[in-house]
Image: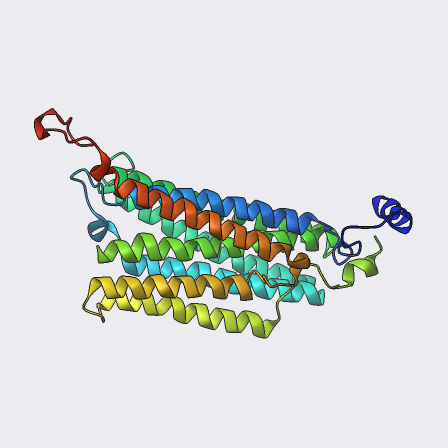
Length: 210
Length: 123
């Protein structure tokens, strides 16, 4: 409806915008809007990175990064998230081709890798807390748990979203609405992988070099 | 909107990757992840400062690889608005992070001198 009136308007009045840019997907401007949301999410992570950067050397006599970070575990976790990114990419390619079954399979694989990531992270957090390296121990640990925990929470919500999409694709198939949702979810998922690059580099690897 | 409309992958919308694009991106990011972990875990470069510079550089390259091959940001997607939003956000992130670190690391120098015994126990 809005489109029709837009076109009618366009016939009479000069247009100052691209009138044909919202027909490529059912999403219209949803994808751009979601992208703007992701950028604001990136800013949240930027503030958390800045906070961590400021407090990262304030151990308050507690353990430092070299004592508590287990790089092999982090490497495994990084591999999980990276693999989940490529499997989501495969889901997107099958979505383009309209292969519902393949999309579901790749989404399920992505969810498994994502669950592996969250599981390993919770295991790591559990170990740290058992060793007494709790968020309350020092400013460094508060910053660490806030930054890494916020990322983990995002991945957890991404997982819930993947499960919801599995149900929706199972019920309705690859309808335009589901394609739009899967595209948004893909952007969300890949952005979390980009944030993780920052986490493993600036928190874990630089921490181990300290 | 008709179903055929939704199938059209027109210009100006969100762009999609190809299988080849995803696999190239994945291969590059696997290397760009493995190398910094290897550098740090084996200490291949003796100097920690040089190692730090390398892994930070590799991280930036990997972020760009992900942005292009997984997030499909290019000058055409959404008529260039995704790229513009991304660049704006990158500037904001740079200001927030470098500004915070700059101010906070120089705070000690800018504070009034305080005799150690009057200082409360450090947090």
